[in-house]
Figure 1 (cartoon, rainbow, N blue to C red):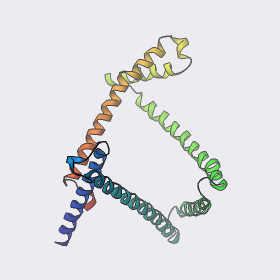
Figure 2: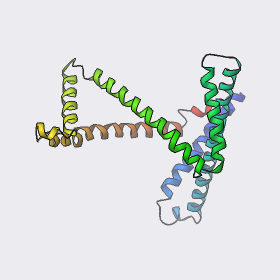
Figure 3: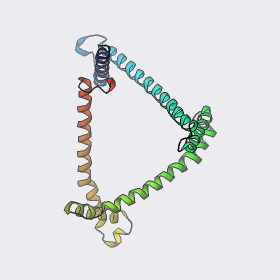
Figure 4: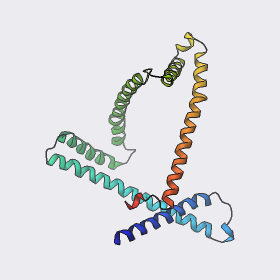
Length: 218
């Protein structure tokens, strides 16, 4: 019974909070008082801002809890001498040094040195590795198996050649065809995907607001 009551309370709190924040988004675009009630618009805005502020505080504590969990997991791995304990030690040392250096603020000389000469080179390295993985995936995707894959390979080759400077020397219409492919069929597909994502997000939000899905009560 206690568990059921807790789930009911969590569901009611989530629905009411979600409706207040959603109403605040629409009220912010409304001019004048709502339904002729003085102060109703201001009250909704204040409550919505308060709920969003609470959510930001909860997210901050969640990040802090995640930090504590990372330290706990990797410290336990080092203590029990599990596989990869050396990497866990490097992670914890890097984490401690970053926290100490970042105490001076994000715009300090030491923090900027950390970003410019450690973080950015690492990101560039990962980007280079990602480019190799993408090239490998593209090579596998270019295998012609049926009619659909044939069209995919054809359009991919046209776009690649049209994007390269040498493409205009091969055929002066390649850049034009490439622009048409990127503007018409590609954009149509992207818009279809975005519409599907938007509809899915709206459906998920409605299911949470009406209490059909309760991820907060699991």
